[in-house]
Length: 254
Image 1 (tube, rainbow, N blue to C red):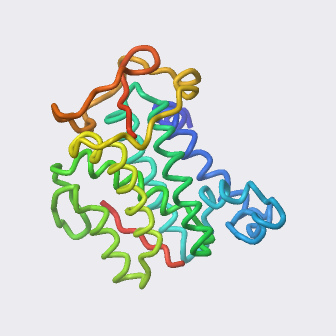
Image 2: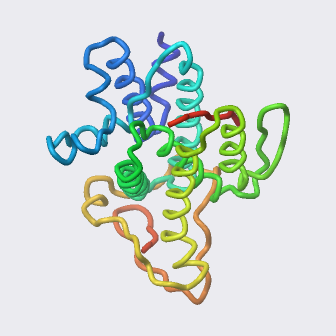
C-alpha cells in the first residue's frame, strides 16, 4: 500500500485531482451511494431544474459494468498518461495555464454535449487532452496495438478510426479531437504561427491562485515557438512567462 501511496503522491497535482475524482465518482455510482441517473448530463434538468452539478459529474462519471470495465481502465490510463505528460512537459511550472486549458476544453465539451444530448463527457475531455499532447509532440514515434508505429500527430485519429471499427461510434472521440484542435489553434497556431490576434488568454486571477513556478520535470514537449512577426506578451505570475492566446465509447491503447 505504501508503494501505491508513493506512486499516487508522485502524480502531478492537477492530474492527481482529476484522476482521483474520475475514480471516486464512478465508484459512488457503482456502489449505489448516489443514483447514477443523477450523475449523467440531462440538458432539460440543467435548464429547468438547475441541476448545475451534472456538467461536472458527467465529465467524471463512467458506468462500470462487466462490458465497460476494461474500457474504463483504458480511459483512466489515457487520463493519467497524457495529462501527466502535458502537466510536466508543455505546461511545466505553469499550472494556471493548464487549468485554463482544461476549463476551456470542458466548457466547449459541455456546450456540445448539451446540444447533442450526450450523457457522458469523460471520453471527450480525455481525448481533447490527448489531442493537445499529440500536437506538442507531433513528430514523436508512438506504438499502437499490434505493434504499429507512427507519429504522435496521427494518434487521436487512429484511435477514432479504430474505435469506430470495433464500436460503431466515434462521436465522443471526434468531439474531443475537435475541441482539442480548437484550443490548440486559438492558443498557439493562429496567434503564433499565422500572426493573428490572441482570442484566448489565461485569466489573471488564476495566476494569483496558481502562480508560475520554476523547476519540475520537463522534456515531454514544449509550446510552439512564436514566429518573429508575432508579438510576445509579458508573462504573468511568479517564476516564468506565459503565452497570451488569445453514445458508443470505445478507446484503443497506445
